[in-house]
Image (tube, rainbow over all chains, first blue to last red; front, side, top):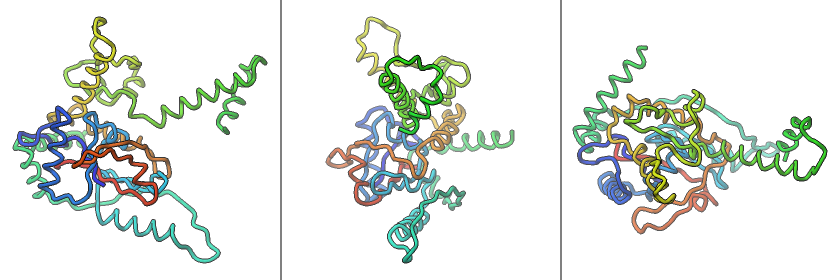
Length: 147
Length: 165
């Protein structure tokens, strides 16, 4: 399931949402252009669900049956999610005779490789302003990390 | 229930020996309210508003910790026009809330610390092992209302959040 949120990098072509109708239109455009085959849920204009789950622009959550959070990542890595699901479902489903499945919690730092060229193309799709603003943000981040 | 009795034990000094049931019920109600506040941090108004000097870009909780007044039932982005009906004032406040969420410039958002506030919101969101929040959202296409708990009822639900970028 994909949850469509606010536009993280609004630009001239894909602006920030000022109405729910515009948000729906942007979500349709994204589905068509990105070829998202999964079903898409559209959050409300104030981002109620996005706020509840942590406001990061491209995060992934796995909710186990019954509603317990099984996995949360502040950035999406499809191989990581798949590997987690394989491990999680296998461990929950079967265990050696005489052994019990005991739940424990982990917290990890992971790395993923971003395709900067592709990301810039996406920014450009939103509009040249989105590229310029991202470059400015990078300067701000550099200044922040220097202090 | 355990928390109620722990609270009752801690507050036993204040018990004046009158109606025990009412006393325990009050403790129970306060515990439930506290739990609800912890469980729903996103309901605290998040005044990330540009052009307002007193707004705290890191959210209301941050503002409270730093001595600014708590936003109560009436949000401070509501117009102070007593002539307007309450529902209209609320609608205007909701529009302001949506406008601050849907920022128009990413660099301004970062400059105001919005990205840091988002990271903090993620850290404050439910942890692994805790119950996920349930919502109903419209499905793109036919607009059917989908309840998340229906999706995770029998199989795990993978939810990816995103936009064009």
